[in-house]
Amino acid sequence: MKGLTRRQTGPGVVFLLCVVSMVSHMRQEKLKFTFMNLGSSFEVGHGNEHNSLTHLTYQETTQLVADRLRSSTPSLGWRSSAASRNPEWSPPPERTNGYLLVRCNGGLNQQRGAICNAVLAARIMNATLVLPALDTNSFWHDKSGFSGIYDVRHFITSLANDVKVVTTLPLVGVVYKQHRRIKPFQLRPPRNALPNWYETVALAKMKEHGAILLSPFSHRLAEELDNLDYQRLRCRVNYHALRFREDVMSLSSKIVARLRAEGQFLAIHLRFEMDMLAFAGCTDIFTVAEQAMLVKYRMENFAEKTLHYTDRRLIGKCPLTPEEVGLILRALGYDNSTHIYIAAGIFGGTARCNNICIYVYVYVHIFFQRRHIWR
Image 1 (cartoon, helix red, strand yellow):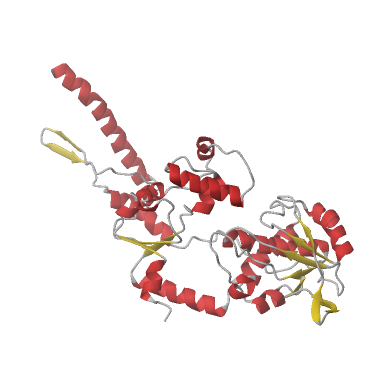
Image 2 (spheres, rainbow, N blue to C red):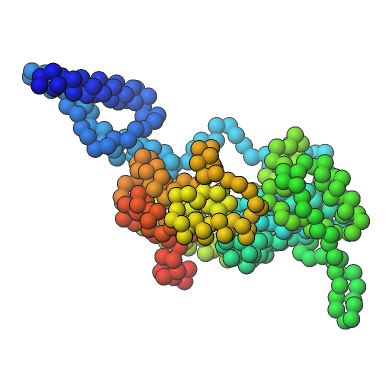
């Protein structure tokens, strides 16, 4: 029995020494990283000596991380270079090669990136850009359009030295008492196309028809470009030209004020929704009925492709589950008093939010509609 006890306590002592060593190292490094205390405390005693492991509770060891996440980080010497233009960067000529229309698709973030690429594509082809059309048939069912979200006048004037922008195609005549506009030729750009494709294939069709429509237009221009002025133009669009409308800014300010009134908070976009899960091919963790819904949605909205859940998950192609997000938040030091606001919904319902639902104050967007905080 003594031998059994000795064999059982041996690994425990080794584990204890490892923990003490780790805590000591963390102190020396001023807690540059954190670990998850599972609620156990250790005491080592010998005779009259009583050495107690410094009481680094879960909250104490991780609160530092949570506080750091809320604070601003130093610039480290980095500065914005998007607003300024190269002295050799010429304004668009009086006459362009034609009109460029694009139909952005994806979520709002993807569509914002597509707008940046549309401006750059217009610059590459010396084209007049028509205000980009935003996807109104996506998962979000938002029909606001470009002019309902962004400040159109600011967008046009801020890019006056980069590209010409108009709100609609020009009229070319009247047929049967109805105004007629240029009919654009529709093209499907390759994914991550190089500028050369726009300078050749797209430009040729633009000169032939007077206008082209590029659809779909998500990730249709290569991200990595050697031309730094092209990259600056993208940034100039994203950080300077794209400004939300005043009514959108006013509503968002009221929402943020309402959130802050409840204390410190987290706003989380889980992206654990039908469109994202169907696109990623992450279906195996759901019920048979839910899998059928995801497969059907994918067939109707995305290109046919064989996807294997296990392989996709191993390479990080599946979104984090609500359970995993809950564990990460706990590890970062956010306790049950944290107010968490979740954008959109969670596919699979409450069965998928065990760990995140341990937080007492979890709200979804319907919370704001009920409180009428915009009034």
